[in-house]
Amino acid sequence: KQEVTQIPAALSVPEGENLVLNCSFTDSAIYNLQWFRQDPGKGLTSLLLIQSSQREQTSGRLNASLDKSSGRSTLYIAASQPGDSATYLCAVPMDSNYQLIWGAGTKLIIKP
Amino acid sequence: KAGVTQTPRYLIKTRGQQVTLSCSPISGHRSVSWYQQTPGQGLQFLFEYFSETQRNKGNFPGRFSGRQFSNSRSEMNVSTLELGDSALYLCASSLFDGTGELFFGEGSRLTVL
Image (tube, rainbow over all chains, first blue to last red; front, side, top):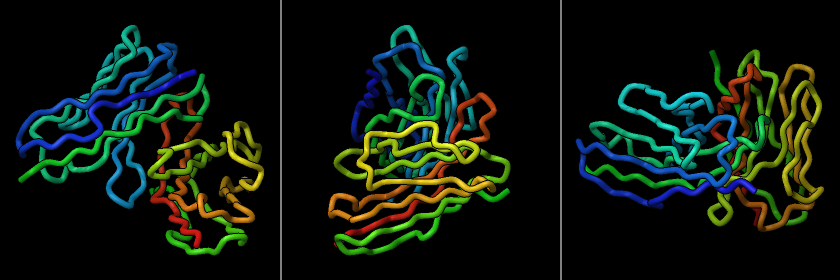
């Protein structure tokens, strides 16, 4: 049974720092891995999608990597800003369908 | 291009009532899935529809049901509401192009009193 874990549960850093969020999964036979952002009381915003054949994806200051053999993905945020404060979630689909298994999220606070 | 639209955004019901939530996917997206988010359980999959057919269902009681219309809009219904049904209900749509990428709406926040 696939399980997704995100550590740490919360992270607080000063503005301007580079940081890494972690996501691990127990079954390496994943179809893809998706990172989302959720602001308080809001829905989910898709940040990056990495296919199983890819090693990383980049969007602006965000870079997500995928290492299936070790069951890990990392989300790297460069030059953090207070606007990056949110909860970041990673998710993988069951088999090849659209039923996602979620991590519990990392709550990120960027201090001005 | 409009995103995923969920209505209503907020609603308050009492135990025993029923509720219907609506989701309009991104234009051209034919797959719609629903998730429940609570502080204690996190995000949990409810069901997924494609071309008006339920393809997958999560581990929720029969009080939770859904459907999809020919225009890909979807509704979910919860009957005989319980206090534990209070949650943020999120709808996601997908182009079903093989990438598996999901796009979410803002959610419907249900409070059961």
